[in-house]
Image 1 (cartoon, rainbow, N blue to C red):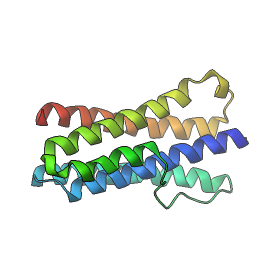
Image 2 (cartoon, rainbow, N blue to C red):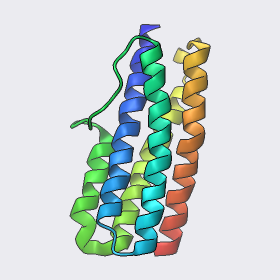
Image 3 (cartoon, one colour):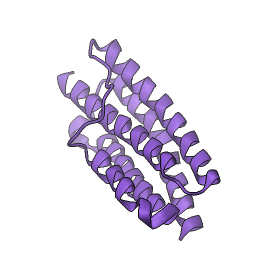
Image 4 (cartoon, helix red, strand yellow):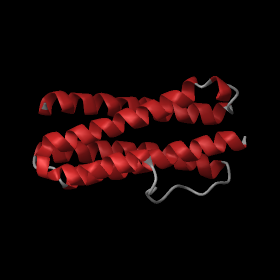
Length: 148
Protein backbone atom coordinates (compact mmCIF):
# COMPACT_ATOMS: atom_id res chain seq x y z
CA UNK A 1 0.00 0.00 0.00
CA UNK A 2 2.90 2.37 0.70
CA UNK A 3 3.96 2.26 -2.96
CA UNK A 4 0.37 3.09 -3.97
CA UNK A 5 0.35 6.14 -1.73
CA UNK A 6 3.76 7.34 -2.93
CA UNK A 7 2.56 7.07 -6.53
CA UNK A 8 -0.65 8.91 -5.65
CA UNK A 9 1.34 11.64 -3.88
CA UNK A 10 3.61 12.07 -6.88
CA UNK A 11 0.71 12.32 -9.33
CA UNK A 12 -1.13 14.70 -7.03
CA UNK A 13 1.95 16.93 -6.77
CA UNK A 14 2.31 16.98 -10.55
CA UNK A 15 -1.38 17.85 -10.86
CA UNK A 16 -0.98 20.70 -8.37
CA UNK A 17 1.96 22.02 -10.37
CA UNK A 18 -0.08 21.92 -13.56
CA UNK A 19 -2.93 23.92 -11.98
CA UNK A 20 -0.41 26.58 -11.07
CA UNK A 21 1.05 26.45 -14.57
CA UNK A 22 -2.33 27.08 -16.14
CA UNK A 23 -2.95 29.99 -13.77
CA UNK A 24 0.43 31.53 -14.59
CA UNK A 25 -0.22 31.15 -18.31
CA UNK A 26 -3.64 32.80 -17.95
CA UNK A 27 -2.13 35.72 -16.02
CA UNK A 28 0.35 36.40 -18.80
CA UNK A 29 -1.81 35.75 -21.83
CA UNK A 30 -2.19 38.58 -24.36
CA UNK A 31 -5.53 37.35 -25.66
CA UNK A 32 -8.71 37.56 -23.58
CA UNK A 33 -10.04 34.41 -25.27
CA UNK A 34 -6.88 32.49 -24.40
CA UNK A 35 -6.93 33.82 -20.84
CA UNK A 36 -10.50 32.59 -20.40
CA UNK A 37 -9.71 29.18 -21.91
CA UNK A 38 -6.66 28.75 -19.66
CA UNK A 39 -8.61 29.81 -16.57
CA UNK A 40 -11.30 27.27 -17.39
CA UNK A 41 -8.70 24.51 -17.79
CA UNK A 42 -7.11 25.56 -14.49
CA UNK A 43 -10.51 25.21 -12.81
CA UNK A 44 -11.08 21.76 -14.33
CA UNK A 45 -7.61 20.65 -13.30
CA UNK A 46 -8.22 22.03 -9.79
CA UNK A 47 -11.28 19.77 -9.54
CA UNK A 48 -9.10 16.81 -10.46
CA UNK A 49 -6.56 17.94 -7.87
CA UNK A 50 -9.30 18.07 -5.22
CA UNK A 51 -10.29 14.48 -6.02
CA UNK A 52 -6.68 13.31 -5.81
CA UNK A 53 -6.18 15.17 -2.52
CA UNK A 54 -9.37 13.57 -1.16
CA UNK A 55 -7.87 10.20 -2.07
CA UNK A 56 -4.72 11.04 -0.15
CA UNK A 57 -6.74 12.11 2.88
CA UNK A 58 -8.80 8.91 2.76
CA UNK A 59 -5.51 7.05 3.16
CA UNK A 60 -4.42 9.18 6.12
CA UNK A 61 -2.12 11.48 4.15
CA UNK A 62 -1.98 15.26 4.06
CA UNK A 63 -3.23 16.98 0.89
CA UNK A 64 -0.79 18.59 -1.51
CA UNK A 65 -1.16 22.35 -1.09
CA UNK A 66 2.04 23.85 -2.47
CA UNK A 67 4.07 23.83 -5.66
CA UNK A 68 7.03 21.49 -5.82
CA UNK A 69 10.30 23.20 -6.55
CA UNK A 70 11.71 20.14 -8.26
CA UNK A 71 8.67 19.00 -10.21
CA UNK A 72 9.21 18.73 -13.93
CA UNK A 73 5.80 20.18 -14.75
CA UNK A 74 6.49 23.13 -12.49
CA UNK A 75 9.81 23.69 -14.23
CA UNK A 76 8.18 23.40 -17.65
CA UNK A 77 5.42 25.80 -16.71
CA UNK A 78 7.98 28.25 -15.30
CA UNK A 79 9.14 28.60 -18.89
CA UNK A 80 5.79 30.28 -19.51
CA UNK A 81 6.97 33.27 -17.54
CA UNK A 82 10.16 33.36 -19.58
CA UNK A 83 8.17 33.00 -22.78
CA UNK A 84 5.87 35.92 -22.11
CA UNK A 85 7.91 38.10 -24.41
CA UNK A 86 7.05 35.52 -27.07
CA UNK A 87 3.32 36.17 -26.61
CA UNK A 88 0.48 33.70 -26.67
CA UNK A 89 2.17 31.30 -29.07
CA UNK A 90 5.14 30.76 -26.75
CA UNK A 91 2.87 30.35 -23.72
CA UNK A 92 0.75 27.79 -25.58
CA UNK A 93 3.88 25.82 -26.49
CA UNK A 94 4.88 25.66 -22.82
CA UNK A 95 1.39 24.55 -21.80
CA UNK A 96 1.54 21.84 -24.46
CA UNK A 97 4.88 20.61 -23.08
CA UNK A 98 3.45 20.48 -19.57
CA UNK A 99 0.36 18.59 -20.71
CA UNK A 100 2.45 16.05 -22.59
CA UNK A 101 4.53 15.50 -19.46
CA UNK A 102 1.63 15.04 -17.05
CA UNK A 103 -0.32 12.79 -19.44
CA UNK A 104 2.73 10.59 -19.94
CA UNK A 105 3.30 10.38 -16.19
CA UNK A 106 -0.27 9.18 -15.60
CA UNK A 107 -0.13 6.78 -18.58
CA UNK A 108 3.12 5.29 -17.31
CA UNK A 109 1.57 4.51 -13.93
CA UNK A 110 -1.55 3.01 -15.46
CA UNK A 111 0.43 0.73 -17.78
CA UNK A 112 3.29 -0.18 -15.40
CA UNK A 113 3.21 -3.92 -14.75
CA UNK A 114 5.09 -3.38 -11.49
CA UNK A 115 2.04 -1.61 -10.06
CA UNK A 116 -0.55 -3.88 -11.67
CA UNK A 117 -1.60 -5.05 -8.20
CA UNK A 118 -2.33 -1.48 -7.11
CA UNK A 119 -5.23 -1.06 -4.71
CA UNK A 120 -8.41 -0.83 -6.81
CA UNK A 121 -9.59 2.40 -5.16
CA UNK A 122 -6.25 4.10 -5.90
CA UNK A 123 -6.15 2.77 -9.48
CA UNK A 124 -9.73 3.96 -10.10
CA UNK A 125 -8.89 7.39 -8.72
CA UNK A 126 -5.81 7.63 -10.94
CA UNK A 127 -7.78 6.43 -13.99
CA UNK A 128 -10.51 9.01 -13.35
CA UNK A 129 -7.90 11.74 -13.00
CA UNK A 130 -6.20 10.57 -16.19
CA UNK A 131 -9.48 10.99 -18.07
CA UNK A 132 -9.39 14.72 -17.29
CA UNK A 133 -5.64 14.90 -17.88
CA UNK A 134 -6.07 13.45 -21.37
CA UNK A 135 -8.69 16.12 -22.11
CA UNK A 136 -6.12 18.71 -21.05
CA UNK A 137 -3.61 17.18 -23.43
CA UNK A 138 -6.15 17.40 -26.28
CA UNK A 139 -6.93 20.99 -25.27
CA UNK A 140 -3.24 21.91 -25.42
CA UNK A 141 -2.89 20.26 -28.83
CA UNK A 142 -5.89 22.24 -30.08
CA UNK A 143 -4.40 25.47 -28.76
CA UNK A 144 -1.10 24.69 -30.40
CA UNK A 145 -2.83 24.19 -33.75
CA UNK A 146 -4.73 27.44 -33.29
CA UNK A 147 -1.68 29.49 -32.29
CA UNK A 148 0.88 27.84 -34.61
